[in-house]
Length: 109
Image 1: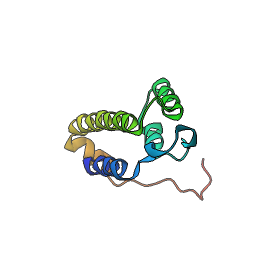
Image 2: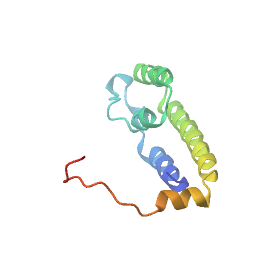
Image 3: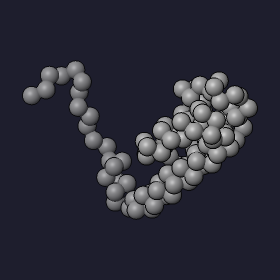
Image 4: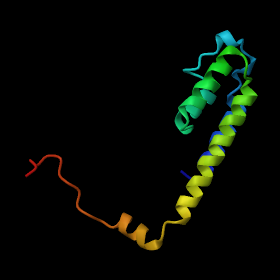
């Protein structure tokens, strides 16, 4: 996942995730873009539960949920950048080296 991937997500969130205008009782969290991205990127299940509860109940606005998502994406991006910086040419060469793939159609021994 590169930087442009996250910029694209943030751009999509800012232009399309405008469910805040709905009454909180009408919010369908299974289809809400903000919640769907948080479900994918946020690792803290307790925090996700609190956000969902607050958002569904109207205690949190879509702008507040957007801020949680942007913060979460920034953390993921920083982690990715640090991990990518540690990949050496040797590691990349090993990873990209051609190697035979196991045949799916031959019985294993």
